[in-house]
Length: 369
Ligand code: SF4
Image (cartoon, rainbow, N blue to C red; front, side, top):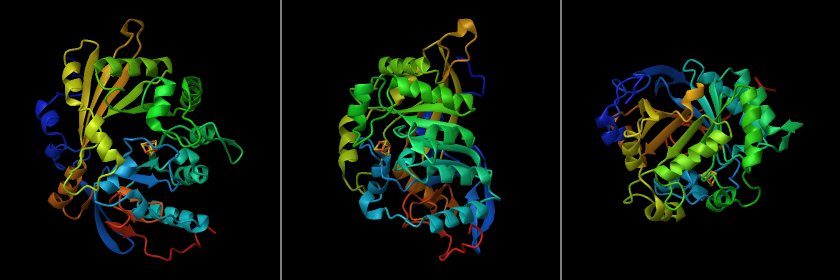
């Protein structure tokens, strides 16, 4: 097995996020202390700031993580999600949050809901660019990327504001199967031809595109279907694909919903896939990433090494929402990630009612008016 970036450690694969040790095997190995609106905060040095779009998603995937996260804390998405409707207030708070987090310089990802249907997205992108936010990422189901927003197509806003990564959720290589799995309410996901155009325009601007696929029985579920998906990505000139295991959760505290029922019936573990990769000469191990509730393995598939092609990064991710809660009690006081919620409040969790950091209301609007 070729391991250009470091040794593969079987124990990490076995224990996954349970083996996370902030000081020993995290990507940053430390924390940063800063003041957030007059209160001291200790934050993981490589923490990500997620801008959680207020726009409701126009799909209804049976494996939806937006629905699963609150369910794993015993509440429904509908009960916990509130939205700041006033644009002036929303952007004033966003600016205040970016300024307060400037000493940390977090990577920033925009997620949903569905950001590509969010009328605020161009302004959010411009705001992040103006603040020089690091490693800006947009995660989307892709449905609105060719829509007009403020005079140009959304993909152009993404390209022109120097977004580093564009993650497009795609459950299957076949357009019809994908639409069936993602159950769009209105606009469909881009078909293969539209995706090809989106990828080309993003790449011309230096934005790296990743396709994201959840492992689901009777869809992408084994090495054969994973390889078909990777080959599909190659036809789009996408060199980065991630396969996600449906997030684990603790049934004892989880509020059952359509996602938890689907996970029971059709969730597919990634362990057998990872074991199979160890046997393949056309896959090279790249690295393992330990997270406080997730575990990632990065592999490189050399699909056409003879012509010098650098190959495709094939990534596998498993996450455990019960481990997330355990991590919080093991490392009390350490903030692992930051979420700017649709209600225009910063929190250390995906629940707007837990770990609220600020800013205290009312925010001064003077800086943005
Ligand atoms: S596209 Fe994403 S947010 Fe929308 S339903 Fe599917 S998993 Fe949920």
